[in-house]
Length: 308
Image 1 (spheres, rainbow, N blue to C red):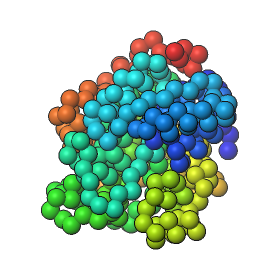
Image 2: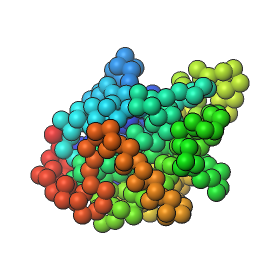
Image 3: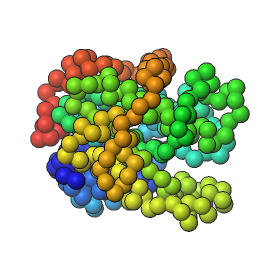
Image 4: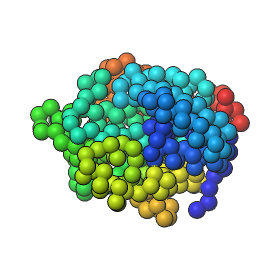
């Protein structure tokens, strides 16, 4: 696969203090890029920043923010914008493995808040900076979902249904797929590509903190984070991003993105619902369609050499 040069380019890794996000950040750093890591744990974040710096990053910054809340997203956006006028890649790998129902500071079910709504909000808030790079890539780290699975829009927070981990995770995954599909439609003509990097079971710190059966399963069958990060790196570095627009990359051995094909009405519904939830909590979003976002991107940001 031919790669674009990312030397001097700026990449943001949300959930980059460990696991797949850190592995992908190190791979991008080895190509001479500048890296911003976003996460909750400052001790882990500083350690991750050192590892990324040692991998060859041109510059490394750590942003401490809990993006499971809209206020945390706003904090992350503010700090990212303070040092980056253009973003060439935004990677979402922040995930949760909670074996009891938990809620965010905003009252959302945790998987919905962290693994879906935070990604939606960050993408919307930073679309101008992504477009300003001339070739912005958004990559959601996700997994395979059962065919035909549709989120229950009447009970996304599992307040009526009995909560369990797998349905909650699958619901947030499908919502993410719907978002990427709708983003490809709404941002046609913008130099911004949203896609999904599909990964399998991965041996990370969070999975290895689970119950015995989880530790045993992932310990035996889980891939190393570096292996799972391969699809992320391919999507960030491919010379031609066109095939990945609104698509999912399943095969880590070859660059062959598969276009998403969910019901457009569902994708539109998820987008509009998410926009309302985020705006109600005070976050200023970038325009949701091509025209406004393009106008926002016309700030004097320009190509890689003009990054601050």
